[in-house]
Length: 225
Image 1 (cartoon, rainbow, N blue to C red):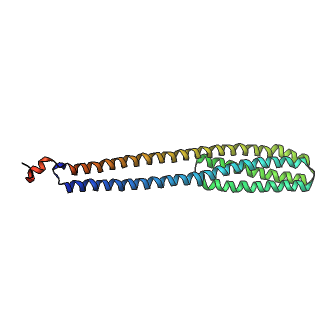
Image 2 (image 1 turned 45 degrees about the horizontal axis):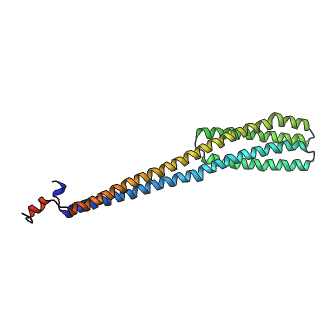
Image 3 (image 1 turned 30 degrees about the vertical axis):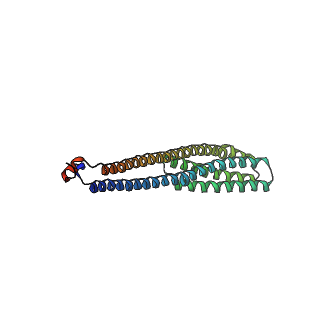
């Protein structure tokens, strides 16, 4: 049986039924894409930015520790050296917190490798810093200066380089997440526009078919000669 031979009620029912199905499909697709976009935004805002901020914190704290280490040797006042040591301790605590954030959110093998190197270098600096404080407390300035040149400062240089690598890595991840979110939005727009246009055309076609019943149908019913 041809569609043209169907009753007007049947054709309209099929047309509007299909239209409703397409609108429901449009709603389901839109909901699914919005959920995907929400997840992408969560990754971008919550995780990627947290990792980037942690990497910047480590870089900043490392620079601060280098400066405080040099300040040990700009004064002979034990009280001032104690202040410098306390500032280094606070910076080390901030680095530890930043490392905890990175441990929580980093998923790439490259990121984990950089974190492991940072932690190793940070532990080496802690040992060197303790040795400097001990040497200065014993009035062994030359010994303390040698430890700073040989161990503490080179370790901080390595940490700074690794922190910058981590910053660059997180920046790339943020840019990738942003691009993925834009692609998801563009795809959702295209898909919704396509299904919406098809639904509109189907609705117009259903109405048109209902208004133009074939002449043959009227002949079969005896309404025209």
